[in-house]
Amino acid sequence: MATRRQLRGVAESLLAGPQHRATGTIRLAVRPDGFAAVAIPLAVHGTQLVLPNDAVALAGPLSSVAALAGIAAGPPDGVYEIVDPLAPDADLNLDPAAVDWLNRCHYAGGFALKHVLPQCHPILWPEHFDVAATAAEVNYGVSAGDAHHPTPYAYVGPWRVPAGPFWNAPFGALYPLPAAPDVDDLTSQIIEFFERGRRELDRSTP
Image (tube, rainbow, N blue to C red; front, side, top):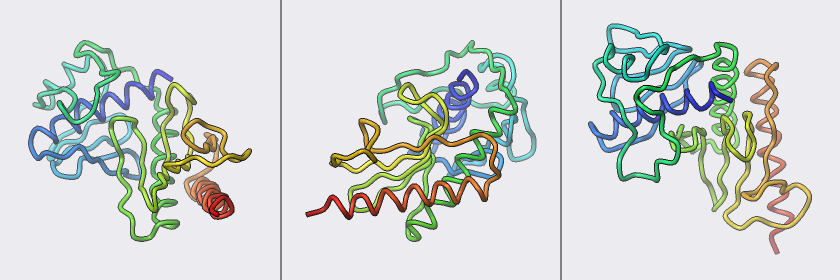
C-alpha cells in the first residue's frame, strides 16, 4: 500500500527523526485522526503536518514539505536499522481514505491496549509503524501493515511462540482489520483478539 509506506516515512522522517535529534526519543502517540510526537510540537492530522501555529499539506516532495515546515527531515540515526526510508525527493500522494483507515486502526489499537493492559502506555513506533505495548514477555499491538501482511492487522507476539492453529504468523498471531467498522466496533474486535491470545497463552503454559 503506497499510502501506508508514505505515512510511515512521514512518521519516521518528519516526526521521529527531528524529535530524536532534539530530545533523544523516537516515541510517537496515536491521535483520533493521526499521530503526534511526544516531546516536540509536531503532529499529523489526516493529510496535514501540524505545527504550533501552522499546518502544511502532506503533498509533493518530502523535502518541500520539510522546508515549508522548517524541519530538518530524516530518520533517527543510530536507534534502529533504517530499512526503507523515504527519499528526500519522494513525492507524497496520500489517499485520504487509506489514511483514515490506518489512523482509525491505530487509534482503536491504542484504546484496546489500554483496556487489556490498563497500566500500559501505548507507543506508536516509527520503525514498524505499529502501536504497541509489552507485558509478561508478550507484545500486543496494531500494525499498519508490512511485507508479511500488507494491510492493517492486530497481533499478539509472545517472545516464545507456542504451537497451535491460533498462531498463524512467524511472530505469533495476527488478525486482519477491516476498513469498514467505526472505532468502537474496531476496538471491540481488537480487544476480543487480544483476550483470546491471552487465553491461548494460558492454555499453552505448563
